[in-house]
Length: 128
Image: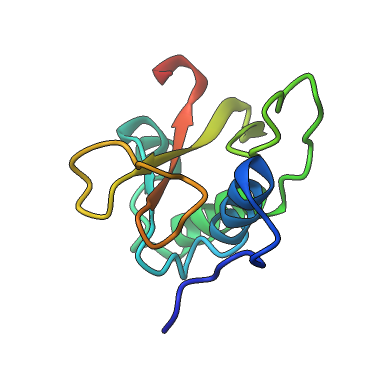
């Protein structure tokens, strides 16, 4: 399955934002990218094999997916790579980092999905 790529006319932050949005809005189908949560978030959700907690995980992922509060104040580079939200009384962040395809180093070009693996991390604010 080919990677979701922005149109050839998109470059720099616009291309990065489109790729970040594609990952954030499809967290259960990240392709070669990844979605992880910290131990603190996993503890907040509980054992996802239990139906109640599986539902809580789904609600959490839906909040990340639906995040659309981007402005110059909270997204100064226009890459749509960070968000803050509340879940069950806790403040959480999600952030996207860019690695090379082998996950050893930073990406040489985050606008190019052929050389970049994106990792979306969901974490408690106090874990940042």
